[in-house]
Image (cartoon, rainbow, N blue to C red; front, side, top):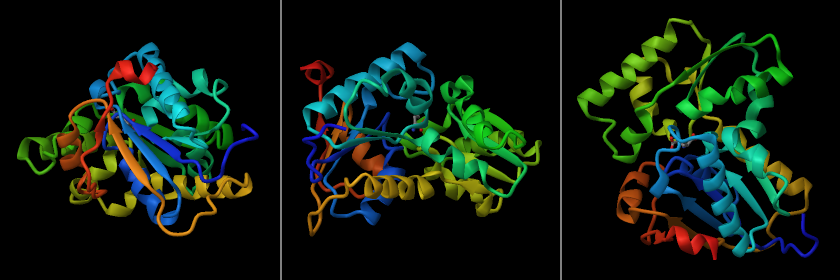
Length: 272
Ligand code: DGL
């Protein structure tokens, strides 16, 4: 951590699109006085089918962008980026970085259950990082990883109510239920948008949104590190996207009301 870091500097959040807002909305609720920046990398959406090298390059660009904004910390509100890019970039910045999977693994591992399902993107599942991190704390837990390749697009286009998409979600859920998991982690920050549909087929308490304890983790760590903002009143927020600001604003509605249209950041500008 840079010695000159001002505790009232902003915290950056990023994801491929609106998914990270499931984390961001909870954060704003718990720590309304923090200044926040959110970056939706919609030009590269979805992250789930990208290579590790591509994902590292996207993450580095966004981290460099946040660096120019003098952030005191960055929250990787994206499981895919946490699984593919965090290890590669974690030592290159002098501010705190909070990757969702690595920060939540211990809490998941300590749940009093034996059989845990993980729904996530293809890239997250292929990385094996969820199992790896959970098994560090609980080698006995049985993990059932499963990718759901269509879900992010369903969320971004806000079409979860359409019959063919309900069918896709139902069939993916059925493939998981064959393993008889006690709980299922929604291991992509977009997936909590589908909780309504999922809960119409299985009890809602089966689905775990890691954002629920991720935000507690960040809050505790900021407190411990003496980085909580000292400001009173509401902190400012600024939302950036790399493409389609209108679509982002519409898709976001379920989790977070955005008043101003997000600012469009061109990729070239990120590097300056
Ligand atoms: N929401 C992200 C995640 O948590 C990325 C989804 C995607 O773009 O494929 O993995």
